[in-house]
Image (tube, rainbow, N blue to C red):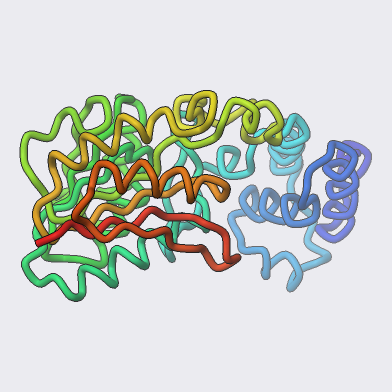
Length: 290
């Protein structure tokens, strides 16, 4: 335990911490131990290895022990340190929002690729914005657009606003409270969303970091994972302009079912499923007919 290493150097502290987190069932115990210690010391992980003999202060060690105890309860590292990197940007996260994930970066990439061919694009809707990661990333990379970031949670919208300010796009990211696309009265050229899509069975077997700590409303897609999608797609079909694009993240096993739903609501559109870099179904891509 860390308490027994009260005057130990960094390298020994990391060894003890890794063993503690391994015993707690954490998937990446060494990485977690390093990230948390670097956070407490106000340094980088590389700094830890450049200064293996550094001895943290008693107060720093006490803070580190507290974080390790929480991580041993499987509280996500991102909540413990208060931020998470996404698409090359650092976002503040709280337990009120879903932690941004690498697979969602594929949505940003496809949105930016399409935007490069659409010079008339001026307004985007990000449905279920959470931390604002998608909205802010798009605003940072598309300085000509405004993004309407929609969420039903006031706490999530507050986090999204903070992230927009942090990255200097608060004047172009406008938060709206409401269910899915209900707050939108206008039609748009680009709609993006990362809705809840885990089925109840998937939630029941999800790791504690997900099932116990992340906001259930951002995860729970109903019995088959598509309950929210069945509400979102009709709303999007009413609000997508001719030639516009809808991009929605989906579960890896949902491609065929989502295709059927989308083709029924967008009979004249180009509808396909895009894969992530692990070749898993990841995104619904709808290009509305002109």
